[in-house]
Image 1 (cartoon, rainbow, N blue to C red):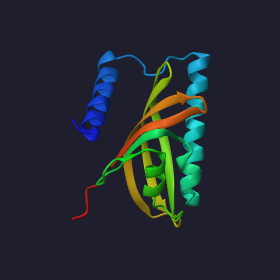
Image 2: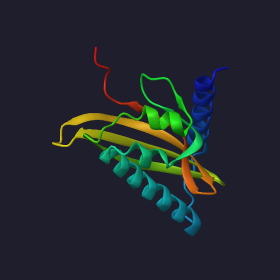
Image 3: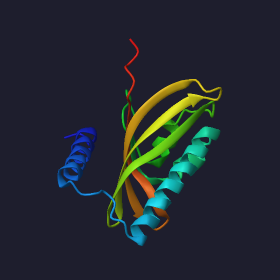
Image 4: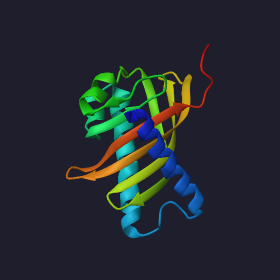
Amino acid sequence: MNNLNMVTKVLLSLMMLSWASGQPLANPTPENDRIINTINSINKKLANCTNKGDVECAAMYYTKDAVYIGPNMKPLVGRDAIKSGMVDDGSTLLTLQADEVELLGNTANELGTYTTATRDGKLLDVGSYIVVWKKTDDGWKLHWDIFNSNLPKNQ
């Protein structure tokens, strides 16, 4: 089984388990609230890096062996590959919105939405994403990052 199939199956399994449980995805404890606030803060920093076109800055929020899966592209494996595959030159604006976060020890699963727009406000894309976060010695990092556009593919 190739890496893409394995990642897809794991992510789908996690989503199905979360949905089937019928429980809130984040238990309201002070520690969980702190972790969720940390993830939201990192998302803002990541968007700021991307919005400046600073791939060095953006890539530092990923684990060394992270997997980045975007629409219509092969997965980028590893921080260096992710950095070289980020092509945004800062001409667009990225917004990330975490909708749900599930905490599982040193791992967190995030389900959210994103938008990209031109600097003059023209909407370019709206989509959904799933991030599997890992707690590392350097703090929380994106480990698996997968996103898809919610807009129809241009023909």
